[in-house]
Length: 212
Image (cartoon, rainbow, N blue to C red; front, side):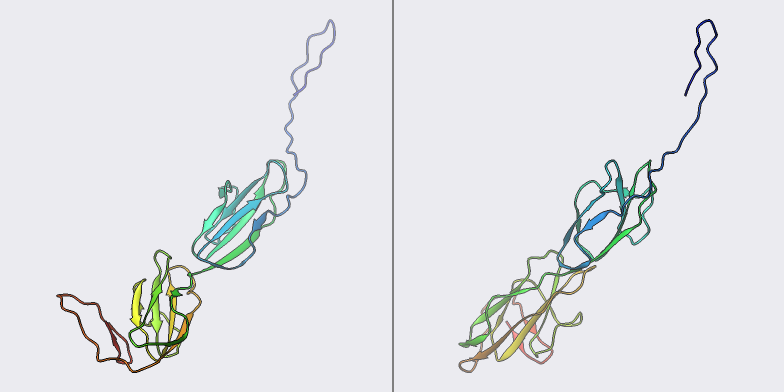
């Protein structure tokens, strides 16, 4: 706004003009880490090189707009997700988009006994510390799939002449890597017994073996 002033004269009317400043196009925001596969989760950070700019992003694979969520703090990604982000500033044209896809995989289960030869009656335990994960196992040498037998974390099995493989599955993420161990027995299995009591846990595998 401006007004003209001169001694002995009345001030002029106020002149008004609106200007939209544009200093160019913002640089694309930085989004870390890079696209890739991550176990269990990934922590994502975003930034813009331009002071005063706001990075806005989406996590549903839609294009970010001025109305999208503003980045304020590191984001924990726990399922496979695509992050798309742009930088916005009132005095600049919005940046081009930065996109990252994070393929999250389940945590590989643990098998607490290494491959080797053991006495009959020895036991091995399969476990995972990942909440919501389902463990599936095989003893026929094939990699576990989503249709393989499911076992609870902490399941203990008698060691036999087989290769034990276990894999974790969790909704919204890729299956884990396969944990494996190959066992042989130093002697034959005993006849086996079931202790007294009203309830027992048994595992029956597809090849006809039963574990108690």
